[in-house]
Image 1 (cartoon, rainbow, N blue to C red):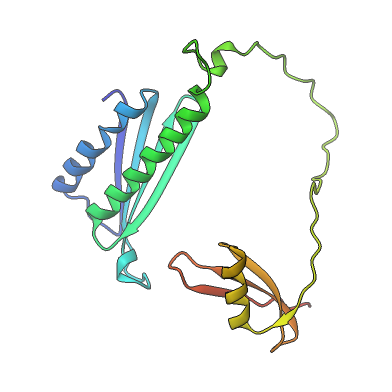
Image 2 (cartoon, one colour):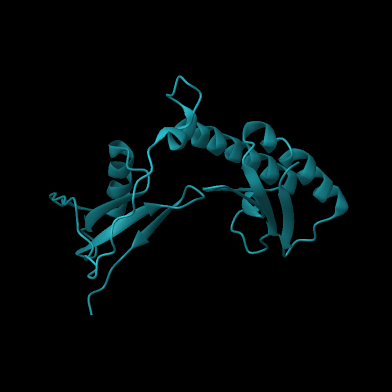
Length: 189
């Protein structure tokens, strides 16, 4: 292992057994990416979690030269959370490697082949943020249940904006991490 490994617990005592388990599992990440310099594993027990399946949290942060990858998973058992986070991290590493090493037949990464670029002179004035895309759409009055159904039909996984016929205002429906829905009801002051 050519990297530093740090294991921390939050509201959770990291026993020697868990430390050995994490160390053994994390050592396998070196096989996938040799440029890893530091790995931090944060383990937590959330007593106030709404679901028992979300009580244990494992977050893995991998740092290396020019990269930062993070994966977090929750489960009802700390080992299951660790394994799920490691699986997610392995997929992220594969995706990272694909973006940085794929497509070159000579075995060199794009960073090695790219010519040196001189930095641009610093501008004295900072440009304001620019909106690059605008969308307009018609809102059809509907109730919350219809909005959920419409959200599913359209394949909108994160959020859906609609005109709530019950309250006579625009609302935002969103999917929560546990699969339930939340509703944002803005009020104008």
